[in-house]
Length: 222
Image 1 (cartoon, rainbow, N blue to C red):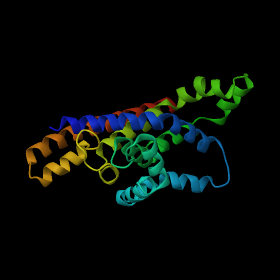
Image 2 (image 1 turned 45 degrees about the vertical axis):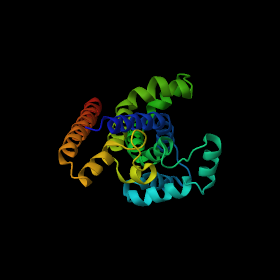
Image 3 (image 1 turned 180 degrees about the horizontal axis):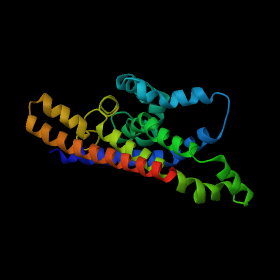
């Protein structure tokens, strides 16, 4: 069992969820409650990681964050190291390819809030901030939690983007999915089997939790 790879995977999953939680809530509310020009295009762009091959997304991330890019050069000047093939670059890639997994459940949750509820809050004198904390978030929390859980599960199982952006540096960018691949390549099937079973159980528990939250949400609206 590659415990270092599992630690990197869990750390990456939790860090990705932490970054996307506030960003997802903000973007989900914006898309759910407002109509603006280009909204359909924005939704399509945010959903692109669902349909783009991981190698394509990984390629563009390498171009944007590589040593020859302005972003990559700025990062190297500030930190003294490259952005790609580092945990920081891996986190950036993870945040980008997990956007739809975070955003979509949250957006549907906010869309399910009746406009009359928000209008009543405004009539009672609640500010937008208090309406968010006291009304919207409590009503939308199952979708928010589902988005976070799906983000963590997807991060644990992601392979293509992680390999292209982070490589396979032990203890820094080598995740459990990459470790499984390396074990199979070296014909260590026992290690690959153990790690695959661990990943399978983690993802199964994650999806079961998501389904339970979805059922609870449906029962609450019934």
